[in-house]
Amino acid sequence: MRLLHTMIRTGDLDRAIAFYTEVLGMRLLRRKDYPEGKFTLAFVGYGDETDHSVIELTYNWGVSSYDLGNGFGHLAVEVENAARACEEARKRGARVVREAGPMNAGTTIIAFIEDPDGYKIEFIQKKQYKQEEN
Image (cartoon, rainbow, N blue to C red; front, side, top):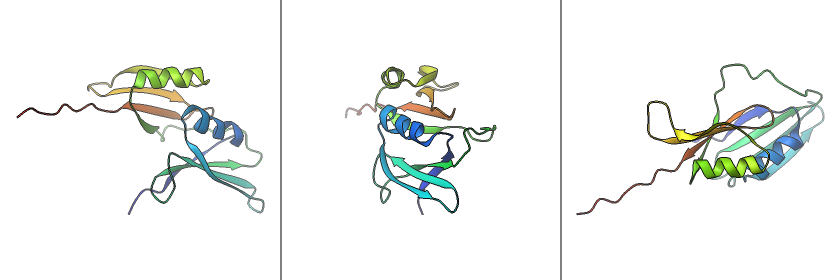
């Protein structure tokens, strides 16, 4: 088994696709309208769906916003440097909601930004492992 995708709803599909491709550097993998169901699906990710988990952006025609509720937490993306990732995201118009720094009660460096619909994206800084000397 493997995780295929995570689905999130968006009130503006073009705006969401622009965020995930231009701010986070993902690719638009596919997009399809379903006129009978009055919705459009777009899949974005860092690699092909055959090998990578992706995000399914769902736009229900005529719905411009959603109540995010309190059950969903965030999406997580590994980055080389969390502070630099925040700066790059900010330059591209993203809202940084937590600057890079150690996580609460831990040492892992994390940061959070928001997509245009208010979903949180966590940047987790890649750990630099030291090689032990013999």
